Amino acid sequence: MAIAPVTAAVFPKTPAGAKVFRPPAARFFGWAWMVFAAANLVDIIWRGDDAASLIAATVMIVGCGLAYVIALRPRIVADDEAVRLHNLIRDVRVPWGAVERIEGGDGVYVHAGERRFRAFVLQVSPRNRMRLEAKARREERKLPDKVAEYVKGRTQTDYAVEQLGEMAEERSRRSGQDGTEPAVTWAWPAITALALPGLAFVVAVVIALV
Image 1 (cartoon, rainbow, N blue to C red):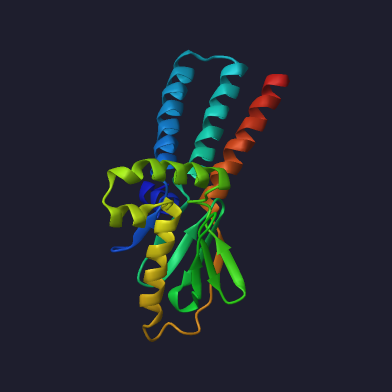
Image 2 (cartoon, rainbow, N blue to C red):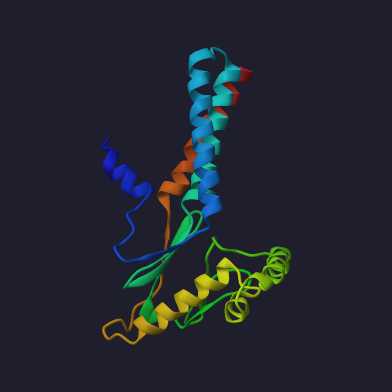
């Protein structure tokens, strides 16, 4: 099996000039788990020789699948043609001509006709929003008045919604994008990353019990 096609499927190349929105912390912890799991797998392969080691190895692999699906894969990609929401196990592509508005609040929402699509990334709970607003008030005195007024109570979600809204307004004026419809597809690399390690874990447990 060629490595390049697999890599392109799992981590598709971002179009040139596209804007990508995703929380850096999630990406950091996702890769941190990958490194941790790889180190533990090497140790298990070197020392392990029983059913418990097999189960531990599959647990590490299941964790890698979860890290990929939850932390590394989800993102919002906005290029010249469309905005794409790469969620847990589904991808949503909304051409700019179909975008009616971008809405914020507790998450990023893309409205297209009677349909509304929510991005998995950049979700903000009411509690986190209150915490961020309190932090902004503490930092307000350190900033110039105009800057403090602009950033007051704003989250990463708010900034993303603002930028996506500007892109939608600009690109919706272009001709030749009318009549396009949103497309929702299954993310098979993500489904595979969950299903195969899960199956391996079940098999390992069965082997240990037999």
